[in-house]
Image 1 (spheres, rainbow, N blue to C red):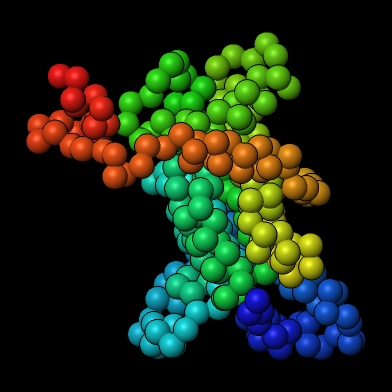
Image 2: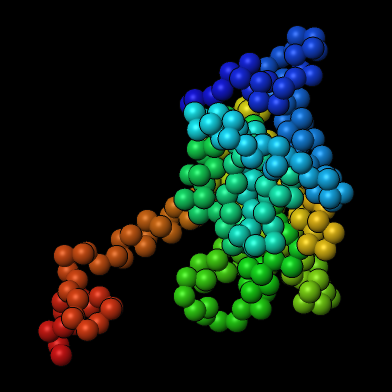
Length: 277
């Protein structure tokens, strides 16, 4: 794997670290990760205080020309696509500062995982934040869903449903709005766990203390980002089951050579079925 050297990591956030006594690599990385969190939360405070400055200070021709040569974002933010939750603004960060991946419900699939792995392994970002938000539309839709969901939105609902079921188990007697908020929290936990479970690259980096996974939630009303308590992640047993299920499904797939398409149909029909008409 390609990791940034300690010197390069230190250069990303400039400094008080250099003035301190010599420490182990793990201690330096831990301090770096803490400084990243401090930088993000200070940016959120500027956002709350309406004293934002980074976007204007860093949105210059000089910065753009420097970034054209390469990037070293010091944090990866996995957040929802919701138009009210732009990480660059709520953390007051400029171009090149954070590597942002946005998708409805801040869920993960292989493409999302690959994007995060790229930033973690090749760009050397030492921290991943899974950022949920209040009144998430994707989670709300999942709580309210009954039966089949039309279109590809169903894949989002399927990904979030385990978090909704977990919220229902843990919190009985909640009204729908309260259940949605509880499910949003559970979804953040689930996504963070999935990053660790489903990505050998992220898991290796986390176990080596080269990357830290943190969970957080954005409040739409007051704009504050709240951090969740740190947890220990483990490889979920479901990963093995998913692999077995995938293998079973692949065995049931009809060979492409056995499929013929009618001119006016969009659904593939096996040869045998065509001959019976």
